[in-house]
Image 1 (tube, rainbow, N blue to C red):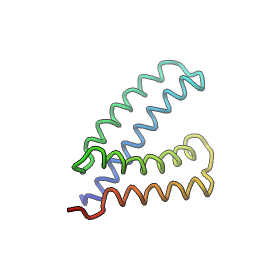
Image 2: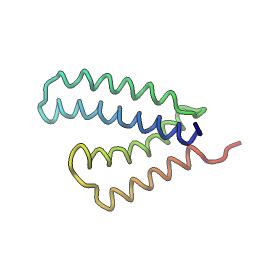
Image 3: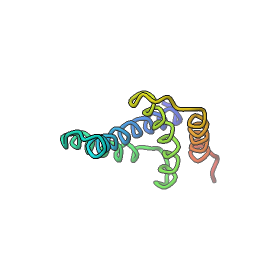
Length: 111
């Protein structure tokens, strides 16, 4: 599988795991859900951390920086699909800029 596709799949999985894990804590603390929500939340956050180690980059910091852009876009998708709030044009513009920035960080030619 090409490195672009592999990276996209890893970052998409990591974003889903991180957002789901953080949302479990949000649901418990902010929405009054049962502390049982923390169990899948913790498992999701562990999966997130593991998935990021699979990103095909030489430096953790660069991988995390690029992932940040993907996380922004995935969070907007979560806002829409899981929370039922349609992102506005500014959300979409910010998300697009974040993904472009992530691609520059990940795939720019380096020595």
